[in-house]
Image (tube, rainbow, N blue to C red; front, side, top):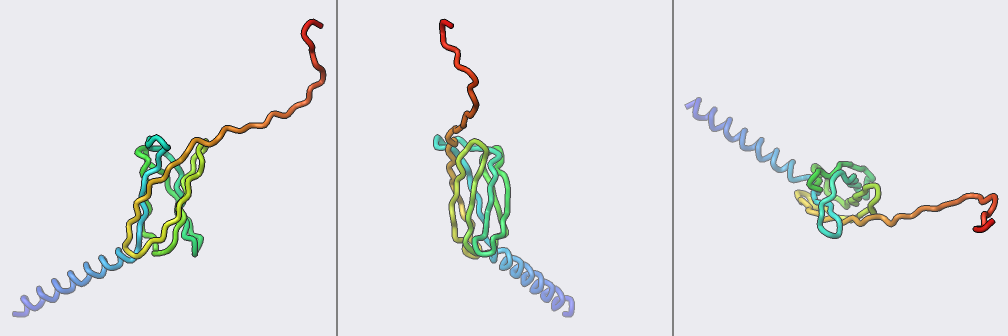
Length: 130
């Protein structure tokens, strides 16, 4: 009889711990997504910055070769997500995350306009025929 009571006690304790762990996991949120260009081609190695707008804490990651990223274990709150890569425009979005929420984002980046300045001094002007 004592063995049956011990086995039941252990089972109840085990299930209670599992339920506690599951409830702790649902107290956080996550953001994942894909970064692509306007034609739908995925963009690898994009720097993703996830910023909690209240605490200003930042988490950074890179997209994989498939253009995908994921950031987990985020406390509920408002988050700014930025995608940046040299030669591309920065893509930003903001998302409010609730406890247990898993947000899926699709971010689009465009090629940045090419701009350059040329400065110099001209000492003399050579005219054709001279």
